[in-house]
Amino acid sequence: MAVELTDEARQYAGRFADVTGVTPRDCLVRAGGERLAVVVPSGEKGTAVGPAGATVERAERLLSVSIDVIEYADTPADFLANALAPAAVRGVTVSRQGVAFAEVVETDRGVAVGEDGHRIDLARELLARHFGVDDVELT
Image 1 (spheres, rainbow, N blue to C red):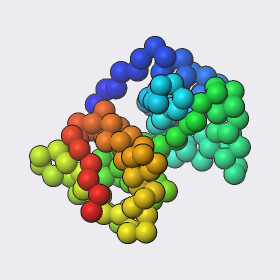
Image 2: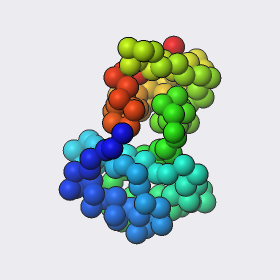
Image 3: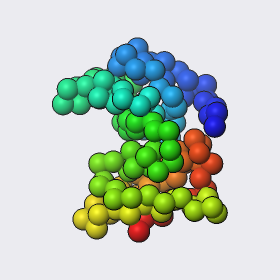
Image 4: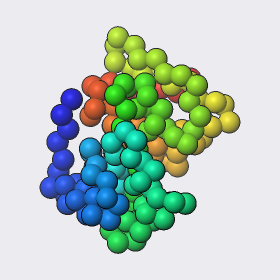
């Protein structure tokens, strides 16, 4: 599924790539421009984040935003698990009705939801953008 970036997201994606050396597959500007969600190609999250988070922290300082780095995956199940990280996801099932059900370890439910629902909302938006999945529910 092709995703379309806003002009603002395109600018942030380019600056993120300049700082980290990783060209994002997708970039969402969130929370009124105070937060970015950057989807990086499979296998490149470590490079984008850097040792002990140093690279992404440098990008956050230079861009004056908080950045969520999500690693892309070829299947909706794997992509959802990546979007909910660091929550431990035991498994994901996607129904024919377009709903993804993620089985999350009970102690990680709060992590999967995130502060004010940030992480689960982001997962929903990304799954819709990349795979046409309409909703995400935690089980």
